[in-house]
Length: 368
Ligand code: KG4
Ligand code: ZN
Image (cartoon, rainbow, N blue to C red; front, side, top):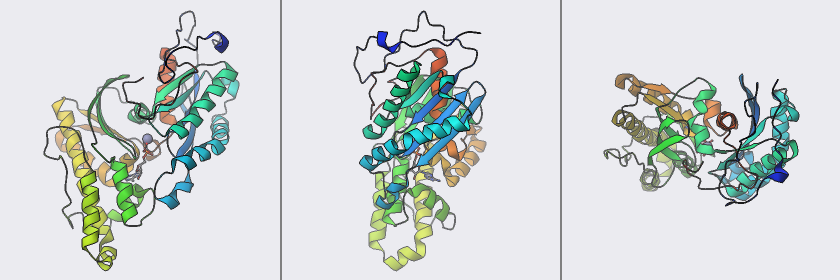
């Protein structure tokens, strides 16, 4: 039986730019364990989440969605940090209990380093550092977007190359995933993220936060052809997106019409908005796959929960001979299971981080 390597953090050289992850030199350490178990922590925005992942797969997945932001129609960063501080330890305890794993059985801790809200990220990162220091196990920093990209692997194995459409409250990215840790960003939004557009339109119509799930449900009763909202950059051969014009078009439409009209046609308005946004997402994703001769497409992030998008992309994929992979809804929105999956791969490959890492709010995919 191989013994677990002990990390003597007192002997580590704490030099280097603290905002960058520097792989620990693992020479001399035998990282090939018979069985590895990792705890993952995700606190980049308004979900406090922890998960445990082992050789057999996901062992637990605990998520607390902070309800405090609902009344404000969006995430209040200061409140998010405070909520993370309050909840992080019980959430970790819950994940360990569900996985029937004790702290001394952990071989590493993975944590989201960015992108995200600095105050929120700090809570997760510092908790992870404390655990690693006390338990003398390695820290594994994970990029949140990389987590979303591979969230599909929590349900089924999808091997690169594939095109990933990452659509969440903070991001809209089209990525060519050549292999693990080798990504090419094909396009991104010039302004609002897809989820942000859902949230802002819901706010205009006083439908509550987060807006995506409410619009998804309400739109089923509406006529998507009721208003022809703009589909920005739809005809361009590039893969970038822009949703702020669509959001403004909805705002002007509401201003031009009476409140009675709005109340009578709210389902039609949101169905038309959703159709405009989804049209662009589907077109660009299919175009990216065809241009790069890739026949696998993965969608990820909170907006990937959208039923209309799931249905439209699946239909389109059939006619285009593409295979579309969509994670289970619980793995689309922010969660620690996806951080655990990426962290587990990195731990196995010995891609570790030092204890002086800092959060990176605008972290891009190439940083790690
Ligand atoms: O991935 P996520 O949990 O957090 C970020 O990393 O941003 O995504 C949250 C976003 C919110 O904007 C929310 O409105 C959107 O995902 N969302 C949806 C649906 N469920 C969540 N958008 C459209 N349809 C849904 N069913
Ligand atoms: Zn996310």
